[in-house]
Length: 379
Image (cartoon, rainbow, N blue to C red; front, side):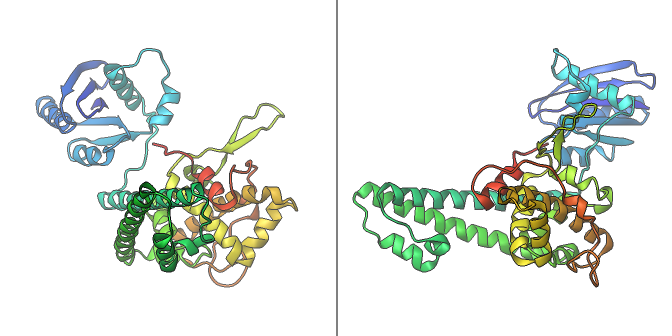
């Protein structure tokens, strides 16, 4: 069997083909769209008349390329880019070198593979991310409106009251000193109204799609978990059986970094790997759960150890615990029942699962903890 390594880009790609003994038999540059790489491999298969396996890094559009290669190749392995960097570290890096490295690591059977969900799940994830971007834009517009009022010495209405129908009418009627300020207010309010309408439409689409997923309804029985958190968890986990209870935290990026040696044990910030949107939603759900559920409130107080300064640390730890509980629920099909030993339904997660020695996130309580836990996107 031949082994193919691909380094794929939008305008130029490289492929390296090894024979069964690991010897390079072809290196080729393909100029143009990634679809031309598929055609090049189709021609190679027709010429060689032997099966081949192929490996490439996960990047934008990796799912489509995987689906295109699957009918041609005996095996398609999609490699985790972050883990590949740990395996191959050298000063010389270009497309040809990267393709050869991928072919070699596949030939040796050492590819750190990533899960490739089905097209429908990839589209679902993409729409969840799109809705989240709309929410972020809406928050930015609200912050600009508050900043406008603050800069003019006008006190905004407290809390969410500013964004009710009455609050927006008050803002639209407020006396502003200059024409520029009034125009800025009108443009921002129009943008806010447009974003709210688009978010409402996106919510309707997601709600309709979620009706066909029993897992979403199941996860909503957890205190603090709403439709957006439940659907994001189902979409990103995809197949719950690919995780163990003690590995889901690593995927969510809610376990601490560790730099230990000998008897010294040093724990750092949470890794922030995996999907940041899901991590953020789980942290927000943990905040709500602490307010709504006595069991979660008691767990939070236990983790705080009498120190209010540890509350954000405890909430991030509870977000990890929520992830473990929700994974167990998807595997078992049981609804949430409260304390792990109570009646009917919640998968038991050991209390120690939430004992994560992470430092508290910076910033204001709820939004800051969620933002700090979310971090930046990972491959």
